Every structure is written in structure tokens, then in C-alpha cells.
Amino acid sequence: AQSVTQPDIHITVSEGASLELRCNYSYGATPYLFWYVQSPGQGLQLLLKYFSGDTLVQGIKGFEAEFKRSQSSFNLRKPSVHWSDAAEYFCAVGPNTGFQKLVFGTGTRLLVSP
Amino acid sequence: GAGVSQSPRYKVAKRGQDVALRCDPISGHVSLFWYQQALGQGPEFLTYFQNEAQLDKSGLPSDRFFAERPEGSVSTLKIQRTQQEDSAVYLCASRRLAGGGELFFGEGSRLTVL
Image 1 (cartoon, each protein chain N blue to C red):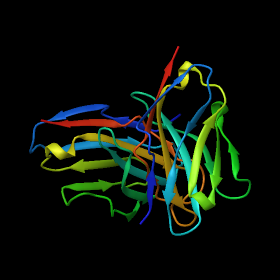
Image 2: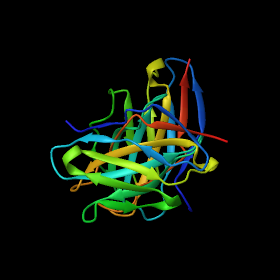
Image 3: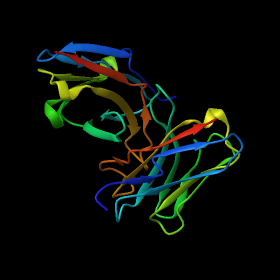
């Protein structure tokens, strides 16, 4: 069965420090992988996605993620966090065929300290 | 419209009442998804429409849940005889194509069942 694990429920990072959010997935075939961000009271916004090719993908707002097939991971990184990055982050996996129903992780809440 | 619009944003229902949640997708988008997001959890798939056809309803929790998209644009998620466990945020998302491309989420409808 498809599943996504985000082991960190909460993470606190100082403003200006680097960030890494972990995501591990279980999927029977080659997956499509996504990171979404959700601010309070807002819908989910796509940060970046991996379909194929280069395993390091760049997204919006200075985020990047690296696909590591051997570790079944797709960790999200940012070199310098801004206070406006405080939000909930969701990793998701979907098939590369059909209508691409997504399976989401439980999310990681990022807190940014001054 | 400019984005995916959902209404109402907030709904409080007494247990046993019927509720209807509306989703206006981005104009011209073929694909429409409904997800349920319980408190502290990631979104979980409910159902998928391609135009007016409901191609997958495997995520609907019970026969009290019903969704429709009769003209291939606006969609309604109906929950009959609401229960406390139905309390959640219901997210609608649309995509321009049947497969591939970015999924755009609405801000959600928060349902509280008392």
C-alpha cells in the first residue's frame, strides 16, 4: 500500500538558519512526489514536484528537494528560513499514470523563532 | 475564476443534519478532487471527477457521503445524517488536465458537527 511518513510533527528553526524536512514514502512503482505548504486558513500550495530526471528539484520560495530512490526519501530543504515560512508542510506521493490520486503524509509544522 | 472557491468556509451542524459543501473549480479544469483533512492529519482522498464523470469514489467513508458534478464544473459534496467523526476540513482541488499538471486547492470548508 502507498504511504508517506513525515517523522517530525513539529520543527522549530531560527530565522536565517537552514531547514530540512524529512519525507519517506512507500510505493510499489515509480512515484510522482510533491511538497505542499499550508498556511493557517489557506489551501495547499504546491512548492515543488518530482516526476523524473534530475533528482534535485527546485521549487518556489527558495525551496529544493532531493529524491533518493535507495532511501525512499524526498526531503525538503531551504538554506535560509524566513519568518514567513512558518506553516504546515505536507509531502505527497502519487502514481505516474491515471488521474494521479495523491497520498499525503501527516504534515510537519514549522515554527520560526526570531 | 482566479482560483478554486469553496463555500461555505465554515459550517456548524447538529448531529443528524444534512450538509452540502460547494466547490467552484478554476474555469475549464477537467479534473476535480475532494479530500478530507481531519485535525492534525494530512488530506485524505475522497473522490475524483473527470468532467462530469465520477471515476473514483473509493475514499468516501460511508454511503452517507455523496458527491456530484452534473455539468462538469461546480461540484457539491453532500453528507447526510452528519456524525461527530465527520468534523474535518473538506478540500476541493482542480487540475486543467485529466493527468499531469499542477493541482490547485481551495481554502476548504471546515465542518464542525456538534
